[in-house]
Length: 144
Picture 1 (cartoon, rainbow, N blue to C red):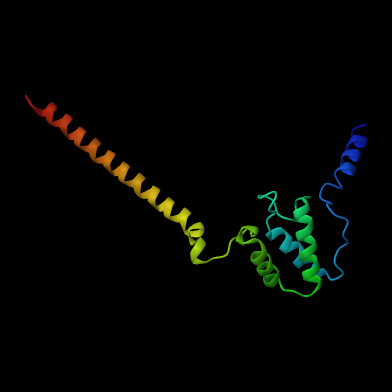
Picture 2: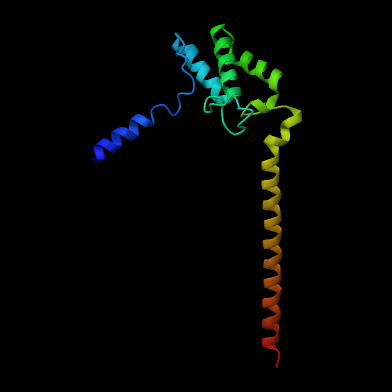
């Protein structure tokens, strides 16, 4: 009985990621490029999913465009550049490095260093207060 249930479960989950019935590209290198690109582009409807992982109509259109561009011999850089020109950098899961978005790359490090500095100052200050409290207690204990 368990084997039958396992087999049914396996058969029903086969089509989970089969969004469109497009066949694979004939060239395995182009197929890998297509898959890589579709995993690097963000679905504008879903926001936190790649176009490869969502059945949204927008993602279907983007996958079709990427497929056509890869079949036409466009490089990954050319495809990404086309998508950025058309939709903006928000379509890329990994934003490009430039002056406009450098805070995305540098901000976390700056905040981490700032937090470590504040924590160091607080701990140092507490250590000084504890040391002065301890010396006051020993001074009072030594008085006759």
